[in-house]
Image (cartoon, rainbow, N blue to C red; front, side, top):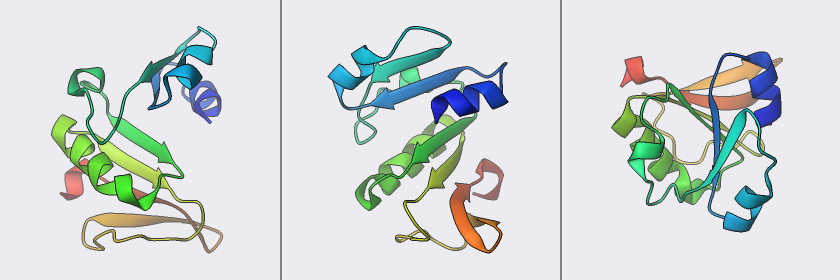
Length: 113
């Protein structure tokens, strides 16, 4: 998915993080940087200056940590669920992204907080 984002936004800096150090090391060097980090205990300096945090199919138990990270660095947060699941996202702060009647993501916009 990072490759598609990179192609769609060629001037954007893309940083991919995962807790799996071996997976991160297997990434080929290029325009997309990959770093091992745990969103539950993030190294905030890695994310400073980011305008968007994007999470593809996150387990529900890390959503609060993603939200805290986005708020902490002043970024928007886009979550793409596995299906139309909503988890426990507060409706007053999160907006559904709907395409052809299907929920394709949830957006926590920094302006709406």
